[in-house]
Image 1 (spheres, helix red, strand yellow):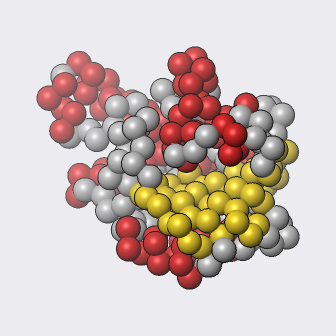
Image 2: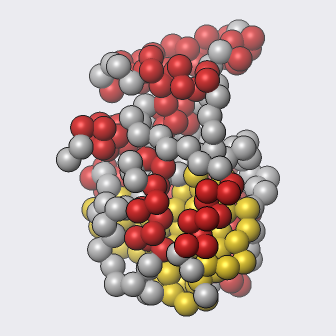
Length: 249
């Protein structure tokens, strides 16, 4: 396994095992209560369009989106590259396997919805990850992705600082600076994230591929999708990033 891929995997394995508190995870009662509505906002869809569909949750992490899909009446299969993520998702009653987004072990043209939130840009080969998972979408099915857009120099500097230390030190460093940010709001310009899980997720992984609207639309078109739409979500602050889906021809 490539060194950067291995380190990225270790980062997420540590994250799902140890950093379980966030406003955007099931550990938050508010998020858990609203997760179905949040997912529908992310997809710009309705409950009726999700119910009874066969869904693949690509890189499921600790299973928050699998949980939301199940609550909307979908049949969910999930996979993740980390053992800790698979364990957490399995506890929710989801069918989950340990697998790599570059080599998803499923037959083509099976799933009504392939959903990938914040995963493919950490694989080291975004185009291949997209292409391999796009093959799994059934005709007239939907593929939805959330991908990083171009990041600020501030984020890139934070990555250089944090990634040079062991996982426990990365957590400790971010914790200290987040506490300072909370006490002195002026530091919000220095520290780009407001909670530990979100900061660790964006800064700690070694591989972080950035895209733009044109590039992502091109991947959809190359994989045989139409009705490609960039979603304007209202549930989160990550609007500069790319929330996009397309329908398989």
